[in-house]
Length: 162
Image (tube, rainbow, N blue to C red; front, side, top):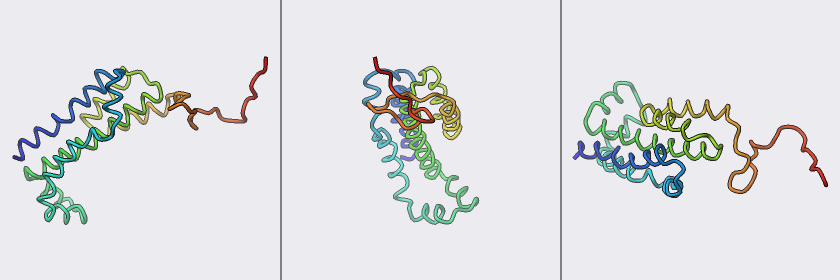
């Protein structure tokens, strides 16, 4: 069963990654990926793997040691649970990157490699996005209102009257 759950973990996340990377501007992508519940299938797999072993997992995560973590991850159940943990968090971070990049008006062709990096090496993908984000001018309008970060620095400029 562990092997099946391991294989299933990425299979249930892959369609959401495909939408964000291959169809980032499709209206259904926004509807589907807009919900944080896209991570729920992976979280359920994680729960199925971890909850039965909670008596072995809790001591390792509450007082972690290198040997303890290595022992936990060295088993098939531990490795499959760690994989589900990573896939779930990477998907959640990837969803945030996708949404944040859209809010900022970043080109999909720029974001796609960042999302791919996030799938493969989660924290490095997040770091790449944060780097790009720091140098990218945010969109002026988000959900119908101006964002604080989009407001120009300094005193307000008076509007011209005709």
